[in-house]
Image (cartoon, helix red, strand yellow):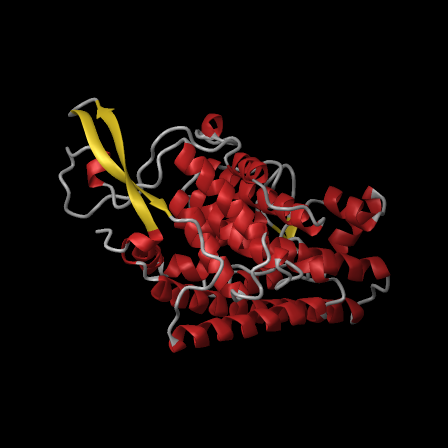
Length: 395
């Protein structure tokens, strides 16, 4: 399979299988990322330019909002649902958007909401000007796996060999290593050095020689190919796309949701990643990736504008009522920024008494601005139906 030695090398690995005994195979170790761009076709350069333009339009729109951070949480929950679905952890988007972050009702929701907490922490880290480090990646992966069966193996770079996928039409009795679609580097020096080199590469300024979109494509490929953790590599790797864009200043606010586009093209996504390792096909992967970033940025911006329109629509509803308090408009803003919430959250966010918060929520319920997630629940949660409608559009 591996016909281009420029992108990496094969190293021998050995192990033992309970059924078939000792085995010998090979793992792929990617070469250190170069300091210049791979050779790209004119079509790919155009795709990269389109992606840059779409990202610039998204960031410009976000920066013009009165509160650019307002749409961070809706974007994070949508990304969490889609990126988790890519890895086999599924819950309906509406359920993710309205879930109680403190008391999720299923293991799936708990794992998906782990992503939201992890991403919020990572964005805050970079937002404070702190660099991406191996320790940060370990911390983020540990947060992602909290409360899951893989928790005890998490929070640190893996110390055992893993394999990815399974080739079609292979004998079910064949050891996993011989049937694997791809085998990433073995634990130890190859993996530790590769991850350390990647982190240093991400922290370096490549702006003179590598387009930012291409840089994030290259770092994404490298992370996924190293596969440094036992679990969560796909989710963490796609999160790093946005984190890298933030670090380079291409985005000022992490509202970009990248995974829905990749989820819809899952097979092509995995195939294009693998083709870099096997054939050195950077051009094909970067073209695919840039097309995804362009569509993701365009879709995110369109959804952002729709949410702003809904925000204004709901405020018009409040204005046409007998309510005149500024806190009613503040609650509308809060409902747009938080897909679901309890009264206690309103109390804290608006800085008003619990009784006042409860009355405000009831008044917006009467206007149809808000609704109850589950009327029979002991701990009632609320949401704005028009906001949920926009966020779940197309799902």
